[in-house]
Image (cartoon, rainbow over all chains, first blue to last red; front, top):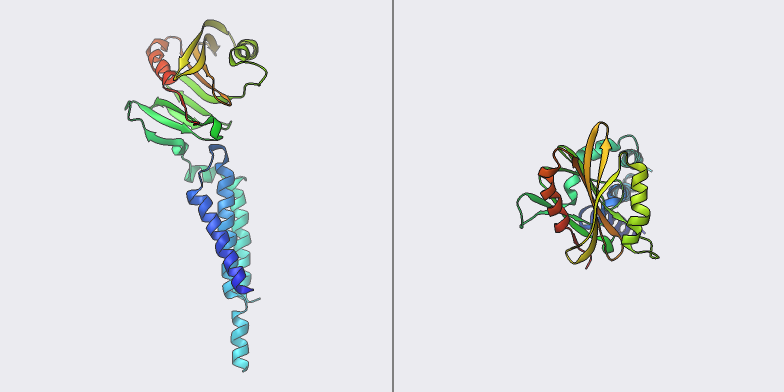
Length: 66
Length: 198
């Protein structure tokens, strides 16, 4: 499950970076492109970090108990 | 859920709120100042003439066009998709797209709809000339008229260039006293217009 979430997060970041750097934005849509690309990047990075840190403390506590 | 996760979630939510404000809200000025690049539309400097800068407009593929404008003129993306607002000493201009209904021709549309509309909204409108020409192989109609802006008289050349989907409109106005000095530039801009929709 965790690996799937990690993959999805990476894909979302990749999508955001693609829209930001490579997508040929029509003149009239630069504003929405700015929002969507950064939105993907923020959500992607956020979920990636949550994925990394989620339950880490719990694991340590469990290991300490053992 | 540990503290780090809560911190990350709060940070993410705050970032999205900030992004929304920068994109659409009161902080949108900040975005246009930091990433403002009206010449993002600027593609390359013309190899043909050092005095002209080449603007390659891209919005809908059928309506891609290329227009060359003097380097020293101020050019900004217009409100409508595929348009540029131009300003220069003693004049102003506009390059835009115009949707012509399928049940009429461009010429008929100009004479029956556009000119009467302009007469209504333009103070002191007085037609000076109307001619049919070819611009890079496309039918074009050039309407020249005089108008009043405040106390000053302006001469305006409006070129309507037919295209595959929309027509292009190049409107260039200059103070009547200075018009002679701009006339050549105006003609050159119109003649250098090119559709890039192939």
